[in-house]
Image (cartoon, rainbow, N blue to C red):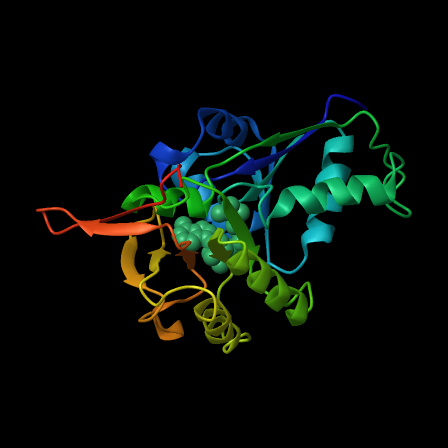
Length: 261
Ligand code: SAH
């Protein structure tokens, strides 16, 4: 049977206003909704009520989810795989495309389903770093670099090397997956590496639960920031040597990186 579709859809940071209309339309049209359970719940909150059959799962089964999406779509269903932020940034779009590439058009082992007629689309979302940057001004206004600090999927020495190179190239850094219970020391080490290259006055932005009801944003400096201020629901933006912060008369601090040197 043909006519099935897999849409990998970004939720944006978590508020209805920052969800793309195309994303909301895809959620409402879905026959099946696949994803990590908090994101499935968020899709229902932002775009619901939804008619889709929900397949919520744990965070660590990305390839299984991706294959499941194609299996369902091969029988003609409209399947949405949900991610937070942008689905192409440390999220599900890669797993979905990798599953397609590795398994070929024939589909999974023993599945017998033909994936060749399944339409595939990726609907982008506003990523955490963009949403956090907007809360404080324009820290990503000039060249910047996005790194995940998670060493679950790549070795820590690769991450250290990238931090070194990014800081010595004077790029603004947006750090995703900065810390977790299973990765308690890595962020402190990352700050140490950055302090060797950048002044202690370098602005640092901590955006937590951006776009969600519990949203908070802190502007501090590289000299003062501590890992205790950060959790896995935070995106960390570290300025370059050019990034500036200033306070307006209302007491709010604004941060920007000029576009000229
Ligand atoms: N695809 C997502 C990123 C997934 S990786 C995106 O584009 O935003 C998960 C990490 O993203 C978290 O550890 C955190 O660093 C960051 N993150 C995702 N949503 C966030 C939010 N609403 N506020 C702050 N950080 C967020």
